[in-house]
Amino acid sequence: MIFSPLEQFQILPLYVLEFGFIDLTITNVTVILGLSFFFTSLIVSSLLKKDKTFYMIPGRFQIVLELLYTTILAMVVDNIRGKEAQNYFPLVFAVFVFILTLNLIGLVPYSFTVTSHLIVTFNMALSLFIGINIICVKKHGMNFFFTFFTGWYEYRICIFISTNRIRFIFF
Image (cartoon, rainbow, N blue to C red; front, side):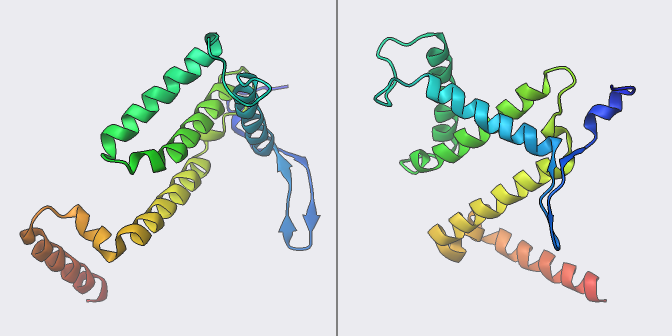
């Protein structure tokens, strides 16, 4: 029974699994993440026919999914100009649908909202940030870092700021 409105944000262990120094405890966060993955895959698989294709004449759910698909694809293509936009669309779409499902599950009364915890949001953002930067450095090399500068004068400003930071840290 919940006695306080803030009790819905507590992380509670449901099943404790410990193997030496490894703690694999199943918490309410783990259950909600599993439910989110299950509902996302259930929605997509319910729209498919037996031969794994969508229906020619779409139903209501397929229309909603197609509108979501085209909206996110248009945003990705507008922001990443060129043919490379098609390569990054599955990542953006999967992250969007996963976070949408997590937040929709959180709207159910007395359920747990995973994205309300800053550590979960920070971990998702940090892992995506590191992954995207690794992909960009592999694709563009070290020239990737110079895409943030628009002119030759900004290189000088960058060198000036970095030397002042080093001087501030060490002296």
